[in-house]
Amino acid sequence: MKTFSKVGVCLIVFSVVFVVFIFQDTAFDSITRFATTSFFATGSGEDFCLSRNQSVLYRKPSPHKPSSYLVSKLRSYEELHKRCGPHTDSYKRSIKQLKSGQIDHNSSDCRYVVWVGLAGLGNRMLSITSAFLYALLTERVLLINQEYDMAGLFCEPFPNSSWILPEDFPLKNKLRRFKQNYDHSYGKMLKDNEINYSMKDQSYLYLYLSHDCDRHDQLFFCDQDQALLSKVPWLIMKSNVYFLPPLFLMSSFDRELNRLFPDKETVFHHLGRYLFHPSDRVWGLITQYYHDHLANAEKRIGIQIRIFHTKTSPFGYVMDQILACIRKEKLLPEIDTEKSIAFPSKNQTSKVVLVTSLFRGYFEKLKKMYGEHPTMTGEVVSVYQPSHEGRQRSWWNSHNVQAWAEIYLLSLSDELVTSAWSTFGYVAQGLRGTRPLILYKIDGTIPDPPCGRGVSMEPCYHAPPTFDCKAKTNVDIATLVPHVRHCEDIRWGIKLFNTS
Image 1: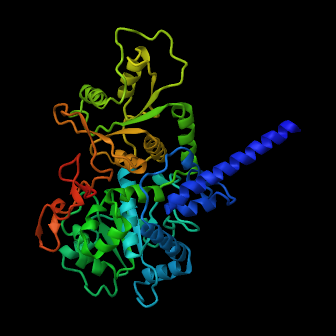
Image 2 (image 1 turned 90 degrees about the vertical axis):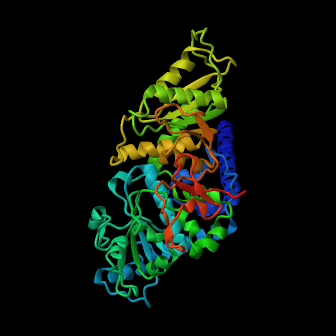
């Protein structure tokens, strides 16, 4: 009986400490305030969302605090989504008008942006974040066209409502077939001089904002075009890029963005942590792998390796680049090649290397090095790789589940090395809230230096517009304002930087 009482007291104390820990973290990081209430709610599966409450046990508190205005704006958005989200009376009225094509601007109290994705998971998460910021700025409700390949990856981000586009949405069956030259495409209508500038009877428009969008599509980033688009209740947006940086060049959004994000390189960090919480299914994979391989290490080092073309980036070149980066940045201790390890050490691992790659060779090389030879410092280094699928299969749900788990595990690293151009790495560094070491792209020879510290932790927009809306001419838009400049890893891309 005494033993039972002691165990009971311990469990009660642990529960109190756990709850206090959560409230202490969210008191400062109030961007996810509503998450704490779900801790006390009954329920299971997606509704419960273990990761929202347990992430504080695995992830260090963010040193980047959101502005009070951003927190307030998110609270207001949550109320808007609750009022206008799927199956509400406002949503039903909007759907009725969408079906009839007759818009009553006096009674239509909700406007929407529907996100349609393509490409890999990293691209999708970046474009969803961009679409969400656009929704915040324009007071629209964001709905996600979730195909099977993305089902069950994330918890619902908004309380007491869903962001998933209902299956009975009138245009649901057409969304996948939407192309750049679709009749309702805003860019095509501009090109063909078919825009009715009153937008009186325009119930919806299609926005093509993918990597291959043209100049007419990119007029979306002009203030005068936003004035037109504001009159359309339903905007259906297809994107696979982080199109967020050009929004910071628009005078109509400038004041609001400065209030939301005084720290310009934390946009994805705050919005990404707010939007993307692993589902219970994915969270189980993350926590099991963490406890099995990463939990006891004094330092965790994530190395994300993305090979776009094996011919231009042969294995030997990439491996030599990785080792050169490790030596240059002193990420791992040197090994003593004159000695061998007779028996694996049972001592606590000093450092753990988490390798993520579609290929197994890089992991095997590192594991062999530190598994067969002792380090000069006596530290024990363990190397792990969760998967090696050989090729990207973004249309497979199981592939995206694994990808999301590995992105999250990388974001728990103490030190992070990413590959140039990789959206997978962009998401990991943004969620982590750190400027990573970037493995520069190999172009025939191994770069010198092999890697370098990022100047901003923001993702890069790979296909930015080249048209200056005010000057009505082509221009390098990375020269227009101090906080939008070219990326470190791709010279024509743009990203957000702090001006200091």
